[in-house]
Length: 466
Ligand SMILES: *Cc1c(COP(=O)(O)O)cnc(C)c1O
Image (cartoon, rainbow, N blue to C red; front, side, top):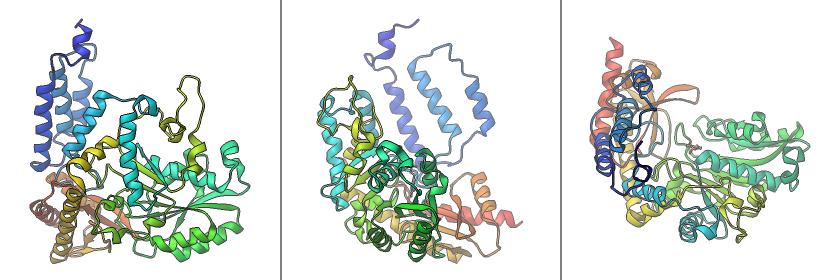
């Protein structure tokens, strides 16, 4: 048996050299080499099941073993050549901050235990609120966009009925319903099931043929629903759909919510990052009307997963949802995270964004966004030259497209690109069509990476044609 205090502690810096090696290796891998896993899944499972947990090994060896499995077995979603979904390449300052948070491990659920960390986190949250035009609002970090959206639902339910706190959804005679576009994120369905609303509470409003919610249909649907046993309590517009980067007509949605006197939420999980780009605030027009906003720092702000943010214009609605009294927690200032948010023990997530804003700053983010918009514009211009048709009109760096030269199915092309392994892209349904999807949202991506993507697409199509 090894001596516990040396194995558990950092005294002799065991593992640090190996960690440095593995970090350098991981970042190198992101700019170079394949995106696809080197090992098929059966081989990964075999390698993992061969590990004997009854026989502890030295830390540096264990680290090498874990890193090796991840390197060979996982899709390199943080790579410069991975153009699928909104996975970030973790920026180094945020990673460093996160390691510091792990080591110091402040207990942030009560302010009095970690006043520095809590105040630092609140400072970042306040910056977000100020950017969103919520000077007297509050924001807090969540595990991700899903938890953030769930908090918005709970706030909206409290606003719709003061009895919700005591009686839950039974406080409503009719079925409480919330309105999102048919292209919204499916997290809404999970949230509806988990909060006791039921999946049928999520009313999917048709789009206008371009992936954006049809506000006229939203108004009619709400009016009809009120006649047929529903109690509308919330409209959630998406600012940057996950599939095609489309932005719902936020102003029109807001006006309907205002007219109905119900909660207006904006799910800006990905695109909300642009609050840090003073030159592009116009793209988010209408977000300043929201009663609540979701932003994932772990998407376009390039901090590690999972770091979501929920901003609430009027924090009093959700306050009672999370408030509890226990004898083993100290009397606080009424603002302790454990009684104002969903989590109890929580990680110091705000430090990731704190480090980014201290080291990279808004100016750095702006440069990153410039690069992403430029790469997407470049790709948009390339695609038609080779007989690919762009299907969305997003103002953001997300492109959905399909092959119109030979009419080869998008799924087959995506599979072939993945098999070739050099780049990776997604496949989604958009307005009834199966399309390929790319977003340029890694700070590592360059024009050469986009050129490689273009040539891989053409090569994949060519080999399928034979
Ligand atoms: C990613 C995303 C979510 C879900 O967020 P998680 O952080 O994955 O929980 C919700 N809405 C939109 C628009 C998203 O893009």
